[in-house]
Length: 112
Image 1 (cartoon, rainbow, N blue to C red):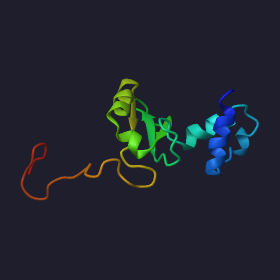
Image 2 (cartoon, rainbow, N blue to C red; image 1 turned 60 degrees about the vertical axis):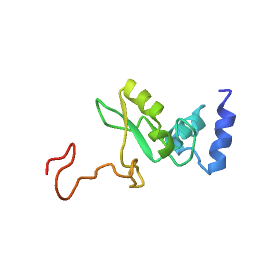
Image 3 (cartoon, rainbow, N blue to C red; image 1 turned 180 degrees about the vertical axis):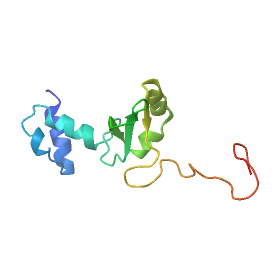
């Protein structure tokens, strides 16, 4: 409850308003930040959803591109049984050459 005014200020700075169903909830701005901002750094551009590996359904939280690529964050995700989507909601990949296969010949890991 003590941090709720800070969460409110962060949401208002981005122009985010809680959905109608959450307007009476005491922690509405905490929920709003959790659904919109990066969980690690609170960046407003959190395009990469994190899901549970076992079910793969539903978004647990979101990460920005910078945080999703950090080794320490990846290690924590694996430890908790979570995985970040490799293609963000905006259609851009997390890593530039992620699914690249050679056209001719063979390379380590690929059969020619």
